[in-house]
Image (cartoon, rainbow, N blue to C red; front, side, top):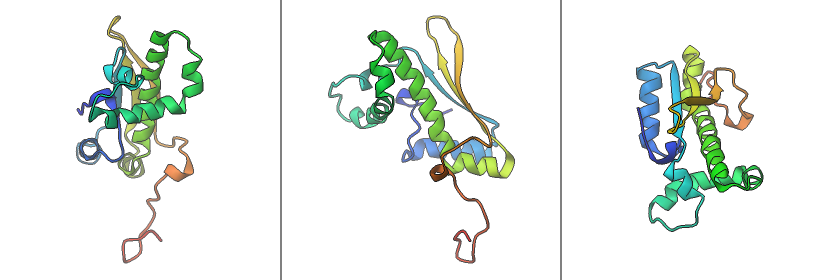
Length: 158
């Protein structure tokens, strides 16, 4: 298990990448779950313009999710509902970030696993809702796919 503020999968975060690599390549897990929760203060603070110091850099990743879905989010007049939708969208984007890693794609290439899940835990009801699921053969953008074909004698892909 790996926990961080707002359940982010950041491609330059060696902590999460190390945990992911260990889980996929050593433990050979069959499922990886990104689990967000309603009322996430990381997501809520990312919706604000408050200067929170160093954490601003981390929350920038959620602001990017907000920017990607700006039209949808700003069409939601109720700020509580908008915030809840951002939590959901953030979970889905983090699952996509997992799928874009060479670690997950390498697992798919070698052993057809893991399956990726995006869940949101509702603190009020106690229910989990699955919002995203990505399996081997997922429709990734071509720029995000890694080539696991043969290498030449210098370690480059042929």
